[in-house]
Image (cartoon, rainbow, N blue to C red):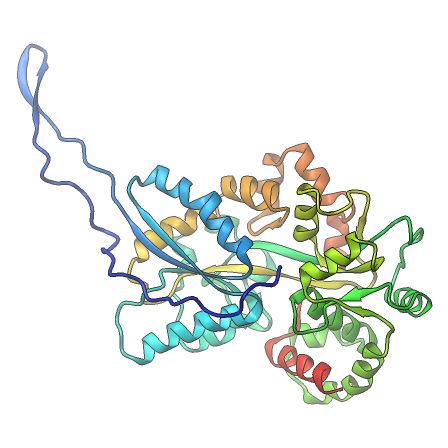
Length: 401
């Protein structure tokens, strides 16, 4: 995801009406003729009007997703409704801001919280659930039968079943210039050999400036340690971390170019300043669509793999407008929006059952999404990030060594 401000816009919303209000019960009846007899025709009930406060972590593309693609569809169904979208910031910090806002309202004893719906990263799920801040809303969802992915049940070692529906699955891959790299490295051993043989031609954004760099550092650690299953599934064992200082020193000794963010890697690649780097697949495809990236460039995942992640749709436990939040969440996770907005427009992999979505996707959409990275590639090489404790410690180890 692209780098944006990591500051939470003030989540102080104006007072809003409860989700159930808005029905016009004062409409007057008008006479009608039925079989020659005057009778009062029932008044047509006015549609409900809802107000929703939605907080989303992530880049501006996450705000655009809601404001430009989904809010209007919701307002077509519920005329006069208002959906306020606030962006809490990029990366895990954006999710942390949402947690802090909800926790503060709970600690203050408020019985109605002013975030009705949130889009969050995996990293925040443990503390959101441990602090009893989320509603177990999925059993009430119109789309509950489509919630089948492993990370809708378990997220970085936390049981999230019933609390989340993935909005999408985003994957990191290596973007490269095929004119410079005729034979893409098949695995990380060949990849590191290529980096050493081509100094400064591989670029990534370290571990502070975007999650594509974090994914590369994580994948490198998985490869060198051989501990992918233990680190991604747990339970936590501090002894496994004894290998990390040497791994991090080796990783940071590679002759790479450090970019200034997820966008920076793409930009340097497109300008020919580097020949390869880890990027988010959806961002790469978006840049191609917008004419900002050479369409001849390719995407690959080297063995044993590299992480991706979902973003989750969650509803706070004391959301003021919970009925409205569930209706909006149902729209977000519907096969229609998943097809049109998530897959076709944004080139993300669907958050709900792909078997339901793929028959609805255009041939052009299928070709774009699976042109370089097949479904088999994803199944074999699409990794998960570590469980939370390892994940925090891994980023610290990278900074210290």
